[in-house]
Image 1: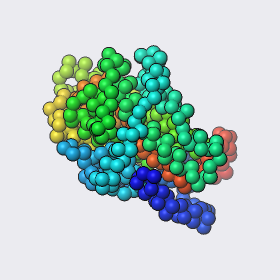
Image 2: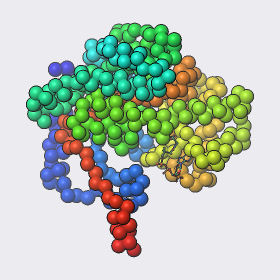
Image 3: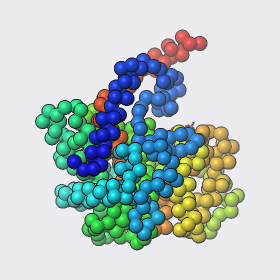
Amino acid sequence: MSKLKEKLYKKIEEWRPRTTKLLKEYGDVKISDVTISQAIGGARSIKCLVTDISYLDPLEGIRFRGYTIPEVLEKLPKVPGCEMPYVEGHVYLLLTGDIPTKKEVEEVAEEFNKRQHVPQYVFDILRAMPRDTHPMTMFSTAILAMQRESLFVQQYNAGISKMDYWDSTYEDALNLLAKLPEIAAYIFRMKYRSDTIIPPDNKLDMGGNFAHMMGIDKPYDDVSRLYFILHSDHESGNVSAHTGHLIASALSDMYYSISGMINGLAGPLHGLANQEVLRWIQGVMDKMGGKIPTEEEMQKFVWDTLDSGQVVPGFGHAVLRKTDPRYMAQREFCLKHLPEDLIFKYVDILFKVVPPILEKQGKAKNPWPNVDAQSGVIQWYYGVKEYDFYTVLFGVGRAFGVAANIIWDRALGYPIERPKSVTTAMLEQMAVAKK
Ligand SMILES: CC(C)(COP(=O)(O)OP(=O)(O)OC[C@H]1O[C@@H](n2cnc3c(N)ncnc32)[C@H](O)[C@@H]1OP(=O)(O)O)[C@@H](O)C(=O)NCCC(=O)NCCS
């Protein structure tokens, strides 16, 4: 058993009695009420999911296993000679709740490297798809195609105990996660770089190897590490995380679950928003003839978007009520590495002008920028200008958090998810009865 798996097993054994006790002794304690607007309005804020991997405070933003983003970036061991930590160390943190030592991270990196080989049939399937297929469709298809590799399915069919479900789920997770960077880079180079594929270099860490396979020089390796870490998890209620959890709750395996969560991430109100941001900015740049708009000019573009009934991409959030710390982490990177970049300047003007406008309009509950407002700029600067691809990058990162959640779901024996629905007539009756 690898050191990481051993440690995870110990943590699971320690954790199980807590969940059992809560269920047995306090199962009736009420933690949330549900209103009609929540039932119609996307289950907003109803407390009905449990995760210990991350927690999203509306004002503070995300904490991974109790650590804020600046703490994660500071405390996780760094790749030698680089600014950013190992993605592998972040996976260790998400799974175990502990900050790994350098040696522990190197062991995980080694373990991922061993599992990296992508079966040829995955590439064959990608190549058989029309080249103009959206990269998210390709990514999801590639993951789904590997479902036949699932160890969980084999072991489930062999009749293993429920208590052991987490073990083969963990194996499936590591096997799949190790392959995602190569699949993503393959889609990128096949679609957008004249099919010039760069094979992996398994001497490199995950972020370094991804940059290598993308064919982009330093500091794109650090960009990749930062990007994958920041996008890994945002507690359980967002569409991608919840979709992954929901699918897995039917005991569908990791491949089904991660492919499904990628499809949720592909929506314009979720992960696709980062490509929308770039598309929106490009539209303004075209109108400005490449010049930097004044604040007044930018205000007009923002109002034009709102007046035509569209949302301003990259702003607002279902839970957050302040600037997303994932936005700030990327902003700091931009200030250090690309302060003079034209698109960054656009993004910075938007940071100034959009929140007061959204406040004035009075609809959005959160006028502040989210992660997507900043991430495309960095990719563009380092040559990834095909913004259709940005959500695939988000998907690679998000898979780490969703997989960690699913392993723990299995470890703690969370059951199949089944909220109750009501009819409109029932709501009307309940509403009248309360008046
Ligand atoms: C993220 C988002 C989907 C959250 O949705 P939500 O929880 O329903 O947000 P709110 O409760 O604040 O929405 C209330 C109203 O404000 C509007 N609103 C929210 N954010 C807005 C924005 N950025 N621009 C314009 N209007 C916005 C909503 O469309 C909604 O309008 P409606 O009442 O006419 O339907 C929403 O803020 C949005 O569409 N943002 C732009 C897309 C984006 O950046 N997505 C990435 C999220 S990480």
